[in-house]
Length: 156
Image (cartoon, rainbow, N blue to C red; front, side, top):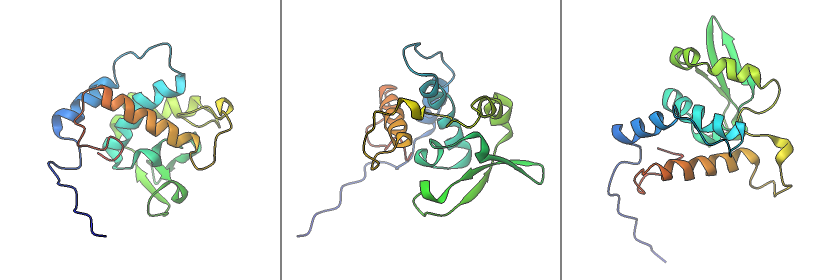
C-alpha cells in the first residue's frame, strides 16, 4: 500500500527566534517542584545540543567521565550505544559552555548521571531507559515554551 509523504511546511530545525526562546528559557529559575537533575537537563541539554550538534538522546545519558581533555581541549564523549549511527565520537566542548560552568556541574555529580537519578527508577521496561524519559520531558518543556508543532523538539 502506498502512502503519500507528509507535506513539509518548514525546515526541520528551529529558526533563530525559536532557538533564542529555548536558550533564554534555560537561564530562568525553574520550579522547586522538579528534581535537581531535570533542572540541570533544562539548563544544560539545549546549550550542549546547540554547540555540539549532538542529539538530545546522546546528551541525556552523560556522566562526568564523558568529559575528557585531549591535547588541551575539553571534549564530550558520545557513546555509540546512545546514537543513531552506533558510532563513538568525541566532540569539542565550546568555551562558552565551560565559562557557564558545565564542567563544574559535571564534576559535582561524581559518578552519577548528569541529568537523571537512577535510584528514582520505577522499574520500567528496558525499552525506555531513564535517559530517554528525560528527553521526552525536555520535549514537553520545549513545547510549553510555544515552539512550533512542526519541529521535533529533540531533533531541531
